[in-house]
Every structure is written in C-alpha cells, then in structure tokens.
Image (cartoon, rainbow, N blue to C red; front, side, top):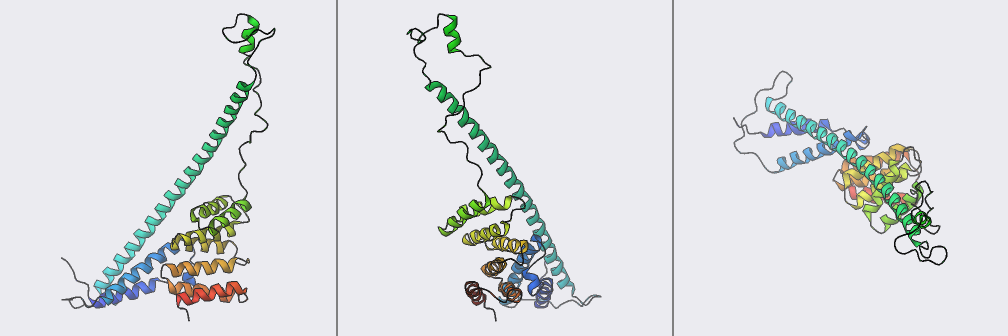
Length: 307
C-alpha cells in the first residue's frame, strides 16, 4: 500500500539528518576519506529535503500515527531508516569504486614500465643492427668483391661470425633511455603545466610524485593535485587532495594554503558552512599569514558568505 509522507515526517527526517551531520570544524576535517565522501552524500540528501519542503504542502496528507515507545513517529522512523540505508549503500559503493580505481592505476603503471623497458630493448637492438650494417661489407682481402656466394672457408667465416662473438656496443652518439625524472623536476614541470592551464599534465605530475613513498615533497604534490582538480572543476576530489596535503604536515608553511584550497573546494560544491568552518580553523591555527594568503582567505570567506 502506497503511503504519502506528511509534513511532520518530512521535518522529522530533516531534523534527524541534521543530527547526523556534525557541525563546526569537525566536519571540515573528517577522520578519513570515507568520512568526507559520506559528508558529501549527507549534504546532497539535506538539499533534497530542503527542495521537498519548499515545493509546497503534500495533498491529502494523512495524520501522523501516534509516537512509539521512543517518541518517534512510525513514518519518521521509516524515512530515517531509508536514509541511513541509502547512505550506507553509497558509502559501500564509493569504497568499492576507489578499490577498482587503485587496481586500475597499479595495472596501468605496471604496463607503462613494461612498455618503456620493451622500447629500450628494441632501440638497443635496432642500433646494434644498424651499426653492424654500416660497417664496410665490401671487398674481401686481395681486392676480390665479397658480393655473391662465398667460395672459400675464409670468406664464409667472415660473413658469418662465430655465435660467441660479443655484440657491438651501441653507437656513442645514440642517446640511451632517459632516467625517470626526480620529484623536484616533476613538480616544476607540473607547475608549468598548471600555469598554461594544462590540468591533465599537472595532475599526472602530481600523482607521479605521490606514487613515490616517503618523498619529502608529498605536501607540495598534494596541493598541486588539488589545484589541477580545481581547474577541472572536480571539487569533491580536490577537497580530498587538499585535506590529504594538510594532514601530511599540519604545521608547515604550506598548511594554510592547503586549508584555503579545502575551503574553496567546499564552496565549489555549495558546502558553505564547511568552508567557513575551515577558514575559522585556519584563523585559529595560523593567526599570522602573509598578505597574499590573507587576501586569498578573505576572498574565500566572501564567496562563502562567512560572517
């Protein structure tokens, strides 16, 4: 039997959903990636309830049933359970998709390394064959041309060298396979790509640095990744990148920059309350900022409508 949701049940669901959402700076800095994804989905559900509330009264809404033992109407409890089930399903799907993405990234990196190795081997063998063919295959000793079928054992040996003869070295002028670039070079090239608005190249450079373990430039790479994702208008993943960059070194000189980027990313997907909470947290942790960072923070505060 189809049941129509009344205004009381809708308001109760909104209140319960608001209780699920933590406030203040704790929301701005979740404990894990899953927490941040869950917060994004809860924000979306809260916006959907707000749209339902503004759409006007629901016609032929029945009276609310009497409250149960805990004082919560039965209809409201059903809505809350449905919302919680939906949030749990979304969280599980996000965790599954992230695992698939990590597996695909590992397989792609492995294939790229194998391709580079195969390319280096092919170039080396081609250069060896080219240098062997460039050697004078002309006249045999005594002025007799070596073209045609060999007639003597000595000529046969000259044309077919022993199998155990060492392979000729590659030509001196032929460049070898270039070594992988250092994190500093990758970051410098990524910043150059970001300035010319090549966000894909900037993102690739940032992820290349982050793939190396225990690198001292991880925070710089995280901020570069957030900037490139912001250029692609991928605000939620940019928020994750800025949050990871801040957590890697919360007292470094670039930590305020990561928090400003996090607030800007929050504001990008209309999470203005969380953006203001992040900026308030930054003001408490870093009361003295440079003029440039102070100006960026004020601009972010104005865009979010903070008090």
